[in-house]
Length: 186
Image (cartoon, rainbow, N blue to C red; front, side, top):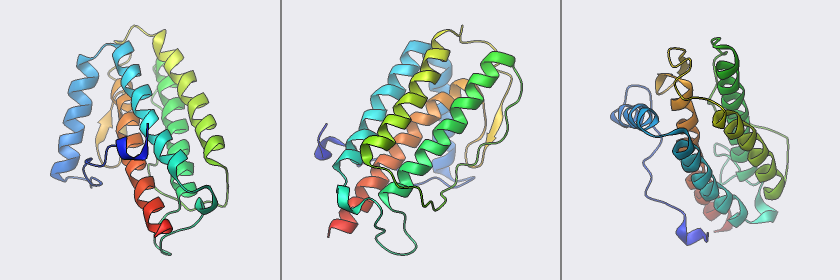
């Protein structure tokens, strides 16, 4: 997938209570309930490719460069995406395995000194997701849907909705990486 094929028409970041947050929450709920587990997994896998394309399109020598002090570098966006993915993955697996309420997930950007190449970030994300998708493939799809935990913007989601959230999260940060890459290359 080339940089020109990456979707740039995604909405801006949603804030709690906004119409955009309500729209995304509705999407997560309706699609997660409607789609089969293989279809949900395919959506997540397919849109991971957009994140990969944006990450690999970023200038390798500028991964840690921020457009401004208040912005995030590509490296920091990738670190954030992986951290949230790992938290969501652990939570989904825990709910499927035990039905217990997982700890809250902080979907917040944090600065990091951890530096990796695009290939390293991608490899870590891919490994994390494949473990989760494999666990989801062994689920029936209807277990523990009453167990919901809070997302700071979209409210309480069940494990199927959180799985689909990963897709939305990937797309949002793919676009962010493109924006950062363009700014540091200008």
